[in-house]
Amino acid sequence: MKKKIIGILVFITLMIPTLSATAIANEPPTAPDIEGPSSGKAGIEYTFGLCSSDPDEDEMFYCIDWGDDTGEICLGPYPSGVCVTTTHTWSKSGTYIIEAYAKDAHGAESERSTLEVTMPKSKKIFFTTNGLFEAEIGRRGNPNPLVILSGTYRLRDRFIGFGGTASLGDKTGRFRGAFRNNHFFIKTFTGGRNIIIIGRCVFDDTRTSFTGGWVGRGLPIRGWIIGTLTPS
Image 1 (cartoon, rainbow, N blue to C red):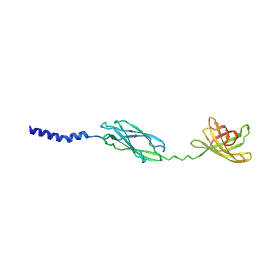
Image 2: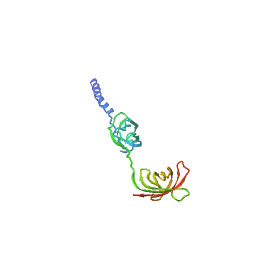
Image 3: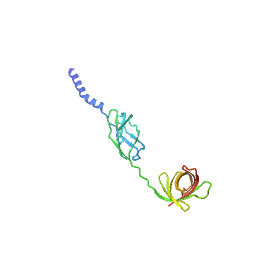
Image 4: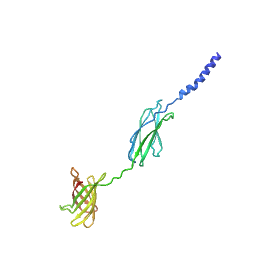
């Protein structure tokens, strides 16, 4: 009987490492998928998704490094298989490597996943001549034009710039101005001095002709304007 008890104890002793190994076995989560834009502009917030799962159905954390020296952050815990979203803004232009991994509640970490994101520098937009600009400017109550403008117009991202020669009888000078939507300003030659006028105008359906009214900046004068934009 004594030998039998000893044998049982030996068997249990030999089984303890096996049972312990089985009890502590833990698989790490899968490497997370990173979903989001691969390019953008600095200073704009972007959203990214992270998805992973844990073979043992343990709760998980998502850890992500944005590649811009802002440090690693970890989100969670979340149930296995739950996808999450997070946002980030890169403050400077450049190319960044996003690195993310998942780790379970026991600290087992997945392999790293990466996504390259480029925040390019804004390209400079240069003026290009797009056609001829002609206009007549007159004072309110007088149908005869005071100044005749002749030059070119140029398209830019959000406005139309124009400039050229201003004529007042046999006198000439320079003018320049811009349309932004239906608003405009013009700095123009009036014989004795340059003045700035501002106003609103209405374009035709093809945006090749316009009419409007103006006031002098800092001056008690008002008037009318009519003109054309002729594409080259």
